[in-house]
Amino acid sequence: ADPTPFDWYHPYDALSGIIDKYVKVEDKILMAGAGTSLLTEEMYHDGYNHIFNIDMSRVAIDLMGTRCASFSRFDFSFKAPKGGGEAQAPLKSSQLEGVQWHQADATDMMAYCEEKVFDAVIDKALLDALFCSDVPERNVMKYLQEVERVLHATGVYICFSFGQPEDRLNFLDNDDPDEVGFLAWTVDVHGENAARAARACARSKRTGSACAASLTSGAR
Image 1 (cartoon, rainbow, N blue to C red):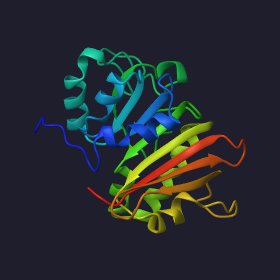
Image 2 (cartoon, rainbow, N blue to C red; image 1 turned 90 degrees about the vertical axis):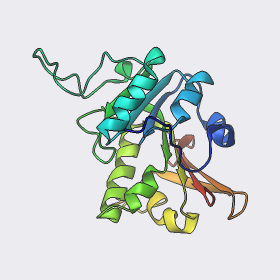
Image 3 (cartoon, helix red, strand yellow; image 1 turned 30 degrees about the vertical axis):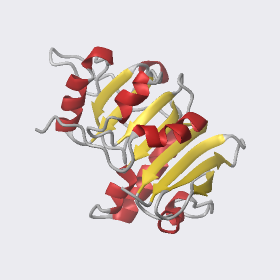
């Protein structure tokens, strides 16, 4: 496997302002679809101490665990220990501290994480990847509902996407409680122009505080 880091879209220095605006350094963060991006490393060195990284790729998770071993922890596992015993999942909030790396499916985290355990979910191109899957609408809907499930009521979802807001808001901003894809958050879109980063953040309808955020990018 190629150990060279790979980042979709913008580097951290172009994104740190919006992350800093909505995410505190002490927050428990889910990095959904972490891949081999430098984002977690750079955020850690910027003071973010609790980043829970998941990806479907075992290769990517192993590469990142090795590359970031000096500041990561490996004492929690979704799988049963090799010597016998039970798996530790679903993990509780107290088990999500530090920097961790786990192979997991972001569209189905029921077996991995309890409800309302994260303060923030950061998504850099995962939503776009799901839109390219075999059953995109179903997978996107499942994923966003899982994001809402694992977020605190005052949590924030930040998504970096190549898609334009008009192509994403049907899924991100579904505020009809009678709809299957209903999400109890609101979405605000902040944009510079179509060729640069368009930013969106969502706020909880229940509390009025930050619940989710989405960023879309029109440039690689």
